[in-house]
Length: 384
Ligand code: PLP
Image 1 (cartoon, rainbow, N blue to C red):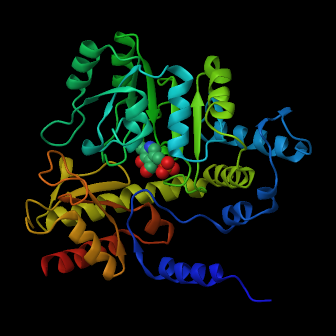
Image 2 (cartoon, protein in one colour):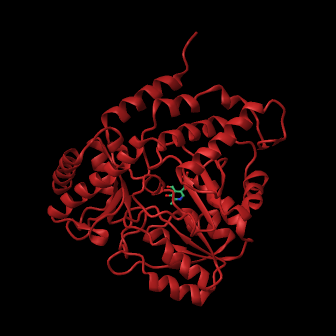
């Protein structure tokens, strides 16, 4: 029998993943065990509902698996918050989180896409911007979250919910300060920790548990699990959250992916994961420091986490983020263009690039390796 064409495409992609230098801050490489779970027979079954309350027969092992997955993630984050592990993605997790606490039309105060937020944090082209009334807080002249502005806008707009969390922000987020502001205006606090969840799990970023009412995340970035999402909430919102996921915004769950999430949780509980996350932070600081030594402008002047943003407009005004992304890709270095604060170029061109070190740290890169990659990127960009 002829083998599907698909496998020859997968082989080519596997070669690309083996050979390229992967610096996209939202990506990582999962373990063989996560891969095995996601590629298992669990893809064959409908399991609508929750453990003990399914709409289909034959779910006994799925009940055991979903309960185990939930329990392991509570252990990872040392929390008694309720967790729903069914969201298919970070975007689905955010939709369910909003629908747990809000009604369409309610006001949400968040960070805009151009300042480092995510599409689902109120972009007009996304469901979030169409369903809810988003208002945005700013970053200051150096690219740091302007907490005074958060407080001022909270008083001015009286949002029902304040959202902390970002896709392209390289500094520690002060969840306590966000929580104090939210409490002062009677708003819920939501944290989208998609990017930094691995750092929270590994003790390299302060935890939002105990401060936020609801916490969403992806599982495939620094957490190094399969592609997917999860939502945690204070126990009193558990029923509302579960109904917001199913039947509110999703149908059948992806149990093969939930199996992969459970394996990732087991891995995150091992001491090696903590060492991995410490290495990610160390490597990111080293690479970012090298760019600064080479004269590049880095948004906020540094990094506290797994990523940083290089503003090319200061050193290479003729090189857009898009051009840098395309040319580096031809040289086997994968990263993505990114707006910098007050970017003169639009989001399709941009004046910056976002660089993340989580994936190559998984491949065993150390500080010296990342410094060498920074030098190589400098050579390529400077030749343009
Ligand atoms: N939230 C944040 C902060 C993100 O960075 C992302 C993805 O990059 C998402 C949510 C959405 O995740 P997904 O792409 O799985 O929908």
